[in-house]
Image (cartoon, rainbow, N blue to C red; front, side, top):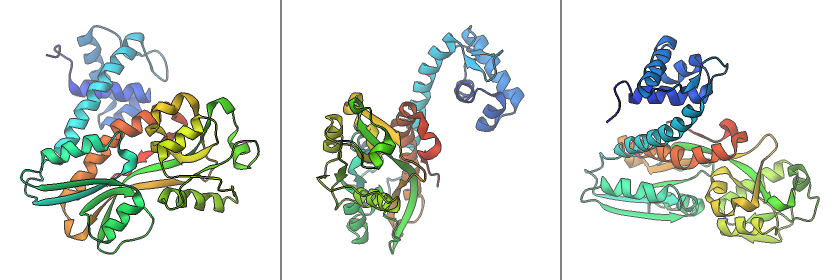
Length: 321
């Protein structure tokens, strides 16, 4: 049981204040007045019996006790938000059948969480879920062999298919950490490291090649790799460098000690992740599922990337429906 004075609202205000360092910004984030923010913090610190924020500094800084409490509080809030997001897909008991495709980029982080959340809410429903590349999922939606699919967008409008944007996933450069390479040198084709391409039949390869062409960059196709993790393993081994997305980078966690990630020069491209649904699915079901996906992606994918690569800023973000 919480101590008297420790409230969920107070913990949310503390997390927002720790992030912004400003009472005024926290008020905007939480929808409270500035006096209410200050009161929430006063109540929380009194209940805990420790000063969490150094109120004398501007921007405000966490005390050592505040840093420790923030780690615990953020983890607890993340679980609560995830539980809340999963409840939003609970109103699916009326469905008789659902076939769902999800991009294989998300096999590590999102798919193992989304599948149980959907299955738990589909009482008596025939449920089929497949994973595949974006190109295959888009074709399946066009052929009506799937009811819904979470995929990178191709930029083309599909007749009879609704699109619900979910996230913006910027592209970035990955290179061997040991090479200590400069991004501008890699893009100019200088130095010993070759460019490692995704397999040309993949949507991500077409998107990357289009950007390189627009920026007047051209690289010999000595390597074309169809597996994302194999490509990251080759970069980690020092075989070459590549371009991937921020969510693709975080998926290659096991190779991070041997990888360096760099931003692409402006204008930096990004892919859009969307939930697609047949037009006959117009209504609350796809919007609820899309919102649940956004919450799960924020907690388990976007937040870890943003923490590791803070220079991404707002370029990696959810797209609210």
